[in-house]
Picture: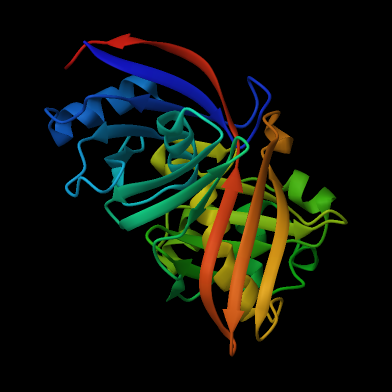
Length: 285
């Protein structure tokens, strides 16, 4: 039997945020066994803790959707780091498939540095295709241009004009899959500016995530979308408060910090909290 823990991440209120399963003692598990356990939990992601390759690091981890392994994800990184720290102040380094991910924990908040600077991934569909895919009109898209970017995982970014458009949007087939195929992605991140920062939604129905309450990796990669649309300074540090999951009844709070120099992104950090809601033991498949 393996010990597991369930956390709600990017929140300090139980039963909100994004649920995460953390499985300890995973050194002896095969990839197939991890996938079976992730499918059993059926949460957006499950993270498995293993002994690090380098003893100077905190842990080696592997992260799974119910359907596949992924190289990096934000809410498993935040939740796992807070679980491992066990106190208010710590420096955690996780060995993830995408690379080393340092996480700083202070006063119950974890902040990770993204392992990769995101880059353009593929073309974005045109406005009519995106409107058909999301159930919106073309006039409800913008003011940014859409884009697809990769930083471990990859996402299609779809800006919408206001909160009403964001609340109305939903994946509509077959136009949804056709639009995502153009950008060679499995997930789309919709966002709009608010007086507090940014409100977003993330849909990935083809990988068993009809809607995600909080997506740390997509939040980090959003930096490239903002840079491409002239929303970041040439040089400086930009801090943005983001909310996700509101429309699905699981509000989540994320903090994005972006460093730029000479028009290029030099570092990306995402911060959040987590609250433990369950623990137990699970059979080894």
